[in-house]
Length: 313
Image (tube, rainbow, N blue to C red):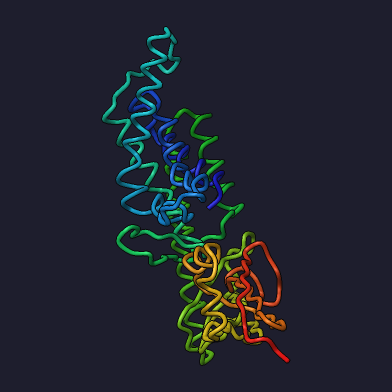
């Protein structure tokens, strides 16, 4: 999810009344809700789980178990420095370190749970497993969610009560569960249409949240389609032509481990596909991911490698 949504969820959590449990309570909830995205600054890291976005810092061990006490410690040190400097805290709240740690844990837990909802997926079990998990419950930035959370925070602050924030968070949970159910119907529509896919992604729309852009892999080909339960509950309403992913080609297998960039891409990609451009003494292999584009389109998700081949005469 985008960081505005993550921040609003942390803010709404704080406005339920939790921010009054300790000084720096609001900061703990909001910062912890964004904390796992610190991995975007470590793409250079030689340690793959950290360099991988939505890897270790988004997992139940790294992001949920280990990082919250670190954030709480930093906030506590900041508070100690402010106290020594003679700062006056308008909230009048005492510093309760136990509650500060608890709030950091609660805020941090919301991050992987939200990121789990979209097709970018998340490695929840890193380091134990590199498996990616996704429920396809939300588009990465959903205006309906932003409006719901923003209204809840605004009303809670205006009325000085946690009720509206609680309702906003409850509404968010209900919205997600309903959308997970619709994505389940989209997967069933594939089965009803005689499609036996080994991998399926059903991305909700940002505005028309009930529609699904469906992409699936079946027998070495990637296909895209559209599902709309308001048009046809049991079947896809559109279905594109299958595009071969070429992943079984020996040239592609060589290119996949030819450079650090392709190795990293293959660790991240969940629907990899390749386009091969044969040249006189080499072949350029361009990798893409079927979740985000048609395989005949060049996008920023592409990486390429050139491998030598016997020279054509």
